[in-house]
Amino acid sequence: MGRPNDEVINSFPGYYMTKEEVEVKDKKTGKVTKKMVVKNMYRGTDVGLGGYVYGIPGMYRNVALIDVASMHPSSIIMLNKLGEYTKNYKNLRDARVYIKHRDYDKVRSMFGGKLAKYLENDSDADELSKALKLPLNAFYGQSFASFNNPARDWMDENNIIALRGALFMRTLQDEVTSRGFTVAHIKTDSIKIPEATPEIISFCVEFGKKYGYDFEHEATYSKMCLVNDSTYIAKYDSKGVRNKGGKHANEWTATAKQFQIPYLFKTLFSHEPLVFDDFCETQSVQEGALYLKFGNGDKRFIGRVGRFCPVKEECGGAELLRIKDGKEYAATGSKGYKWLESEVIDREHYDDIIDKSYYINKVNDAVAAISKYGDFEWFTSDSDEPMPEDYNFEEVSGDPIFMNPPEELPFSLQYN
Image (tube, rainbow, N blue to C red; front, side, top):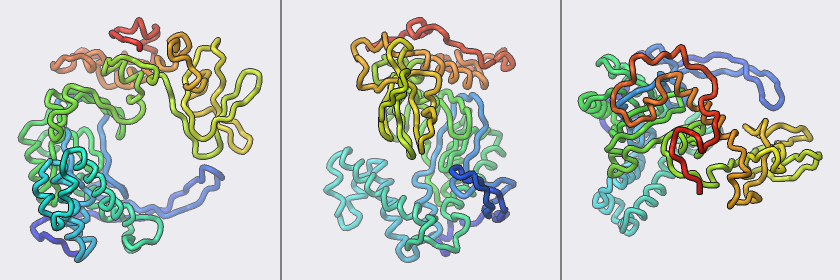
């Protein structure tokens, strides 16, 4: 397809698509079938059918988080995927970007002024931004859906919208590394560069413009530990989130549930007071139902969703099960502990009821995971100095680190 701006680079020499026959096992039936899998190959890498993901697990300092504003919508515009209607789609994208930057006057002049009444305050503007996001994302979602719809092009085998962004990010990766910097992480529309300088940040912004993408330096993490492609824990620097007026300055942020567990996050990182809700776990199942099975064999039906607390052995807890077709399975992460519904726990005396070993073990696991990549004490400290050079990775083991009750952990904790 043509593109609205001939000055924008819209080609990636060397890209090719392949198809491979692979065996796929059905999780329900166990039946093995063969299917053709598309691979998008570029610069020796399969960039995938969705967004490009890349990561080098490790512990890093001064990590610039730079992301593209509305990557998939921008790709749709550059590819002119809606033909004569692309300009209307672009206006929706632009309006949302203007709102994000609090440039309300530009939005008021668009669409004949119809959106002006929704821009009286930041709260209303944010709701309008969410509303604009729906049609923008809906077109992308339906453009590669498995069902027929007006946006689906069945000639598109490689998800060209996501592919364009993936090819760009893979190109940017090489450009950044060729300038002597490490690319620690790429996740679809964002790149994280340790020890980033203003010059490399400016380079990314200018390089993105050549391909029709608007990069934003969202934040810099003073420290970050990347555990895998989707899991990391990081601390914002003193400037916080740049486009939110410095919000979250010097605060920790976590991706993936491993580090987001409230008890773990507060204990190891934020050091906020612990409250009853931090000791509650929500469980849900898509098939079958949840049950509590007590020692006498009685079962209490819960349903598909429930909220539970791990309790001490003497407090009358039960096994937490998922039962499907008459077969019993331990609910995810529940094995080895006794549980009660959170609503039956005495909130005034929960400290005597909760089995905190459940959470202490998760703390131990998190510390062990981070310690594989560096000195945990240095990582969680306020030190701006580089990690000690004498850290011995070979001494790191999976042995528990915090075996004492929470009150004796090396942090100042409060319980409400």
